[in-house]
Length: 401
Ligand code: AMP
Image: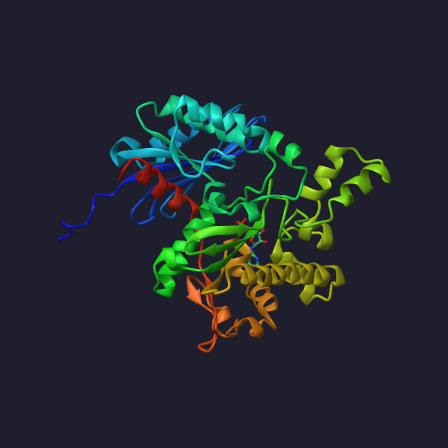
């Protein structure tokens, strides 16, 4: 019956953080996940493995002193609860790598040289690249017969023109320290750009989009003819939109002011701006659901937080409309983008002059959906992101599949 259908190519997708490791076995052609899992509290006294196959969740406490032990715990979960990895016939292991620096503009097969290059740019993402590398090394030991592929969160943005990627900072200082705008969330923006083009019925390489990835971290990307031409995150994920715990755009002189006037050291300021600001800093919670509940309950801090959040989004939509000229669609994705009708409504209110008109009824619907009115010149879409599928696809593409 299905003789013409290509055989499934499964990829084990790994996202290794400093204290956690997420994994998923993904069918690269359909995006179907055969199993997903999360290992938490790596490096602490007792860790936790959560392994999900179909509707069944399996949770267990384990000793995971490091990423190698986490990889062993993951293999054990597969042996115990399935699917049998040997039977699945994995094509590759695909690794999420946060920072590819100036070198990597696409996904690559991991070689010792690639590993060294990822290590070399670790100073640009000191919290992320070292655990990503630990995951790569542990996976290489455990799955020594499988190709390992690195998929960089910065790669999609390497098409940004110099005028968008360059800070007006002393040129020699910037060059010496590789300071430029790299962006992030590239894997998500790339997936969503293609899915949105599909939804619009146009070729991905023709699509002009403003993509708003609104999760706990958040970024906006301007996509021209399928390529990223600007994005709101910069050297690090701190720049741009208001996020769960990050300030987003702020006068850099706030740093000098806190250092000189409040006598704070640089690590304390880093913590405030990256971990104690954003929605959390303004409203007391980094979860938009709490902020919305606060607004409904008449909490003034929550109301201001929501207004600051949506106002920043509106400014980026305006800026990226100017960047793109023609905009086919504004696309919402990730936890807040996919689920918060109030954020979408508040953000787009009053943008009719830009050709954007929201349908309030459609805005309440879920899934991949068009939420603009029939008259809206610019479509407004909600597209659930799927970074794991994109990583699986990239891994297969690198292998020539
Ligand atoms: P992500 O990082 O993409 O997993 O997004 C996580 C964030 O999505 C959470 O911190 C919440 O702020 C937000 N979120 C998830 N579900 C909802 C919802 N139903 N309404 C509003 N925000 C939500």
